[in-house]
Length: 251
Length: 276
Image (cartoon, rainbow over all chains, first blue to last red; front, side, top):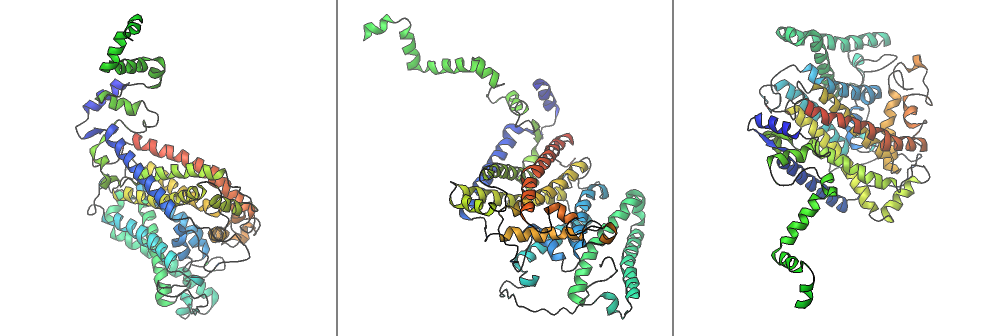
């Protein structure tokens, strides 16, 4: 058995090296550094322990664990069913689908930007901006009432921020409830329809090689991601609360 | 003196051997030829190509590795070392976590005071708690970075698609492990962070009592996605027990099983990715 492995190894090109000692010693060194670092950190900095849990005393602000603060920040712009349930599910499912949606054969096993620009941009935007930047904002800039505070500002629990936002149909002068519902539906569904159609038209040459189902799923995941940014811009820049209000859910 | 030593047979030989150092070689040979030694160690330690292979292939802890790898797989600039560090941090939380379990009871009346006891009375209790918490937080960061580097190097591409999917499950379970552990100190930070987090479940479409279309399903505050998660309508002692069991037993078992698949698939998919 051992001889067999040895023979196989001899056939492979000279680019291969023995795991013992070359890799194992690296792993060993790395483990020592990490464990020493972790121990030193743990000696110097204590884990937090606040007063005992008290269901009658709600802290302000109440924050989720830091790694979920990106999602908690999306709550400003979306209702909990989306920010807290649908968005995380879409993130997980979308991540799992990446290998099946990205059919670009280039850049397999090496770093390259020029051979897969779109893929790198989309992932980096999602990870660095929509996930990491929002977490940093949630940890350091969100104070009482989930209001935005700059690092030099006092976290005033009595800060009053006027809620002047209106729904999109209202901003366009639609006052009737059902007409507004229809208007919002047309806007949201139209966004996805037009976005899909535009993308399919621009990429019409690639449809055959990529596959129609693959492309439809991909473009709609893109549109959801862009839609989140659009909604944030609409709220912050134009005071729009909801785009689509229905008796069952609001977007 | 001289008369006495001459009287014992072979003693001069022995003294010569001790003086020349020959005795140590003979002792070593006696030990390494013994049945105990040969049954424990399956190969020599001399630095020969054969032993380098056997060192990996005949060792249960190391045989997860192939015996040879591409030279580029040694480069930290390529691997960032993040997957391995994530696993190491997981092992650290397992070790420190088991120690913490000796002192901690997941009961509403005791949990917080067990934390105090751990911090102020248990020898090295504070250190164990710190290491557990910081390793858990670090693990969240390193697993994200591992995922980022796997994306940037295109390592999810064929034939490694399936292992990427397993990896996404592992990222999710890492966050769930950390989240369920977050409640256990049973202080204000823990209770309200978990309240904020689990409140989302009440907005689950169809299955949460405040979610879209809930009226068609008939869920209530006492009986919906959130109450299943926390065992009631508020984050109380049943939630503490549930999160404890999930944190210490269920999620580690599932995550551990997935890790086995994840590591095994790396080799089955042709080892660490690299330029073809």
